[in-house]
Image (cartoon, rainbow, N blue to C red; front, top):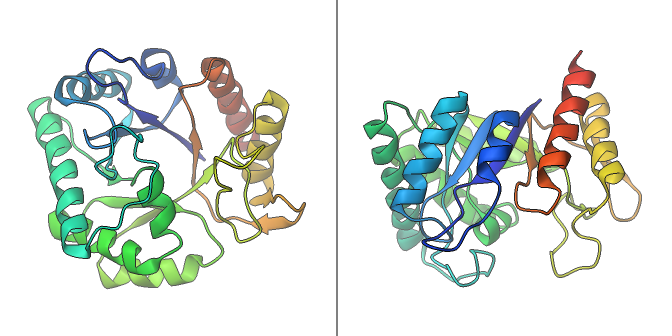
Length: 246
C-alpha cells in the first residue's frame, strides 16, 4: 500500500503544509498546479524536493479557486474543464522536464475530485483531458463501490488507474467522503486514523458513518501534511502500513 500526500500548496508569501518534513515518509506527491494553490516557484521547489527523496510526482489540478482553496463547486462546461486540466498538468510537466523528472499521474483536487466521483460525466471529461495530453499518465481516483464502472470508463480512454482511500476522512454509506462541513468528517484522533489505515491494509474495508463495513479496492492511501500533528500522524501511518505488509 502506497502513501500519497497533497504537496506544494503554499502560495507566494503564504506558507501551507509541512512538505519538507512529510516528503521522506510518502511514496507519491500530489503537487498543486497553481489554480487552487501554489505558484511556479513553489511548484519548482516541490518538484526538487520530491526528486531528492525519490518520490513519485503527480499533478494535482483543481478548479480555478484560490480564495476557496478549490473546495467550492463550479459549474464549468466540459470543453473548458478539459482545457483547465490540460493547462495545469502541462505546466507541471514543463517544470518536471526542466529538472529531469516526469509527472507519472494525475489526481484532481478538492471539489473537482469529489464531483467527478459522483458525476461520471465529469469523470469522463477528466479522463478525456488526461488521455489527450498523455495516455501514459495514470489517473488517481477514489476507491468507490462502483469500481467496475470506473474501470470500464478508463478502458475507453486507454488509461491506467490507481484507486485511493483516505486515512483521516469519515466515509458515507455510499462510499464517498462526508462533507468537511459535517461534524467529525475529519478524524482528529491518532488512534482512529491508525485503526482506519490498519483496517484498509489488512482487510480492504472501511467503517462508514453508520458503522457499516464497506469493501474498498485501494492501492494508495491519502495522508494530509497540513495539520498541527501531521508529521507524527504520517510517521505512524507509515509504520502501520509497513507492519501490515510485513
